[in-house]
Image 1 (cartoon, helix red, strand yellow):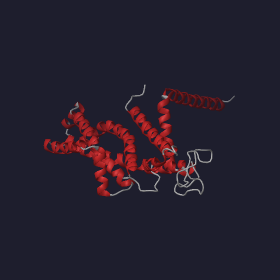
Image 2 (cartoon, one colour):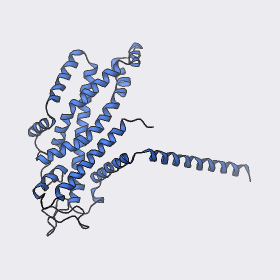
Image 3 (cartoon, one colour):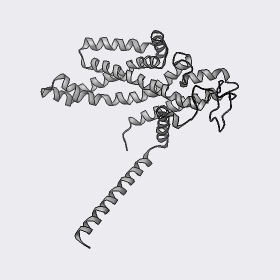
Image 4 (cartoon, helix red, strand yellow):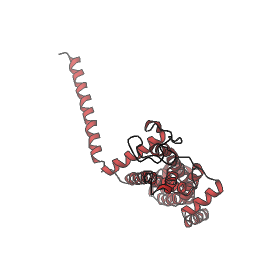
Length: 294
């Protein structure tokens, strides 16, 4: 055997050992994932796939009914039954994911950007600006979220986007208070004082030291708010302040099925269970973000 062959065999053996090591580490990591967390990720991934590619999960149209198929019970042909117009309920839930999840993302994004901006300004500015911003935040916190969101929708009009904006406004105060608390905590740290002492400007210290070390808790709070946003948007849809019919939004589906709850229980049960599962899964995943890996 030549030296080249020996070198080639050593390289191949090292590559196999590295591959086996990566596989064993991956398997060990997967074994450490709690079953509840894995199930939560699976539920959220399924809901997101519904929103991105609904045609992969159902071939029925969400707005067109089938003649003679009104109020059919769940069966092999219609997994979750049909509604009063013969529309497949499973197809409407799948196609409705894009409305509920997009609205939740818009709401959380609005609260994250606006609330965090106000909190950073309040925690970094002089006392007068801090007091003015935080008193405004206290006013928002004193108003019940549902009442505030309904008032905003009345001003903006109905629709998924307007409902998302209303829900996002109700979360601004929470983001602002948390961001301010984190900025004030980080500003008192020794490394921030050292950065100022070494000649760093306020903007540079804020960008390089304060913000990166303040946003961890804010992002974890944003993931927690996603589940709450889904629930709030579904609540507004159930009350008739969200997407107009025949949009297959989850809250609206529950509202449409309440008139048949004694004869067609699946019309309210199926979308209600989907909302509950998505909210619980989002909350479980957000809790895992705040835990350090073992």
